[in-house]
Image (cartoon, rainbow, N blue to C red; front, top):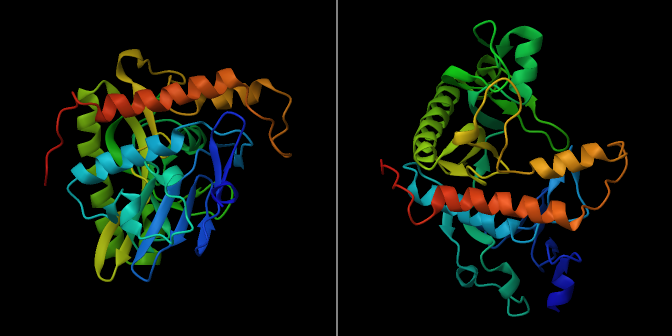
Amino acid sequence: MSQRMYQYDDQGALLETALPLPRRAGKVRDVYELDDQRLLIVSSDRISAFDWVLPTGIPGKGQILTELSAFWLKRLGVPNHMLSCEVEDANLPEAIDPVPLRGRSMIVRRAKVVPFECVARGYLEGSGWRDYLATGEVGGHRLPAGLVQCARLPEPIFTPATKAESGHDENVTFDVMAQSLGEPLAGRLRDLTLAVYRQASEHAAHRGVLIADTKFEWGFAGDELLLVDEVLTPDSSRFWPADQYTPGGPQPSFDKQFVREYLMSTTWDRNSPPPPLPPEVVSRTASKYLEALQRLSGPSAEPLQER
């Protein structure tokens, strides 16, 4: 029974879960309905690049994403959707083997998700860098002339994006978001996003990590606004080692850098199914995810301020 519910690749990465519950699948997470109040979020070991889910996973990635999200959600001073990370609390049907779910699952409150990604940027990279080169602006923020790639911004900025079902999210201005959601809610989301980003960045700096940018999702459970989905992981953020930071070009990072570099070195055209990853790329990527977890949430991590 469990073999049909859990699919692994040759390197032991969990690629797919198929529990006998109502399900929707994202690029990495499988979300199951437990009842009308709770969801079970299972983080697989899938990894995506260039808008494709790769045929090879990263063993242990799902546990790292779950543990790091739980670390932040327990310590950030904002209401959030997390109820438990103990699979037994889900009261799953007896037919489901809970062992593969342990360490990679989170039981959460159901919430109506706000249809915008809430992005905070402290450094100029990614789509923000591309927009700056084209217009001198990022998300409607006019920035100083002459900034270089990965430059630290004078102040963190809020740059929302529309949530795409497939492909890239589309960057929009705060005014576009406010027109859709109303000024009061848009302003609240902006202020909360920047406050959480500053709090997390201060903690990360003590651990030798720069958070270049990150995206949050927010949702409503009744009238209560909650921080939802994954939080401040290498999949949703750019983490850079502070001791290697050199503005003016790309930075080493704690994410899927090795995966992207490998794929760019192949003949893959990005329009057809991607090739499998070699074991050395899988291993190096796994080590970077683990290093991010250990640096940010290790036993010597300085506690975050509770608010």
